Image (cartoon, rainbow, N blue to C red; front, side, top):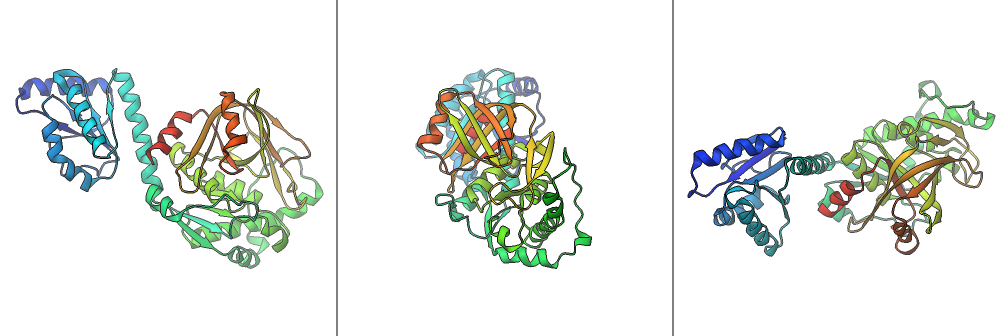
Length: 402
């Protein structure tokens, strides 16, 4: 929901201002709740906008500011038509906000431009609401090789409203052992018939899915990341199939206990409404922008088809070789205290099946070849998230707003 509040100088004729208001807001073609000059419930809507209708409103806003900050910690968005010196007043107000160390933005331009910017802000605010109060389970500590992939619980809670919940991997193993094979249904449709060793591993791969689903429900998790390599010795299987299915069901599920990667997936899911693929950049050509990203699991709702194979490193269990539809993609990653992020748009131009990489292999051409230098000079860990479509601007806005 969008709420629109107004600032108006008493020197201006109300009838004339009201007519301009109706004309301007109608031109935007948006649904909104018009609040006028009553700011009593400011900040309660998904997105609150302050329509600066005239000049001479700077002092009125200054008087209101303390109340507004008590009611909402979000940036202040000023909507202006440009008539009656409203843009000039908005610029003075915005300058004052910056002097106070506060964030804000003036929404001004053609109706099409303003409408699109409001749509973007509404999407960002909706994602913020979705994430607030969510719980990310860290099942086992991050894998030993993830020496830079940890998170700051205080920063994550303050910026996203997400709580990090540490759990022992033994809980998963106990749940796995308590689940009967007779109760382990999971409807899967691979492109080809799996090889015998994969077929024999499927029943326990299904048990792991149910075990992880049990943990999610028990601890009321919205997402989790698991130290999955421990499962190789504990149950002689992998969590790849379970993670692929859970992600497809809207439960963000990450690998190797990588918390920043899981947080990046959560942000993508909240903002865009669909799953992301956690993968390792494996080969990069900085001159052409070509790169291969690979992992042994991918959300099943991201692929047009898939095959079942063994887990690459161990040669056991069940891994996923997924085939994504070719087209635009975005590569994204945020760090553990959400102070840094990387985003680049590109094109998925092929699905590979090399024997010396993890099973799902994406060949992506990054649009801006200079972005490839990031992976070689200042990478945020090794795992990165691939999502379908071009969402670079929106993800940039989201991270900058944190």
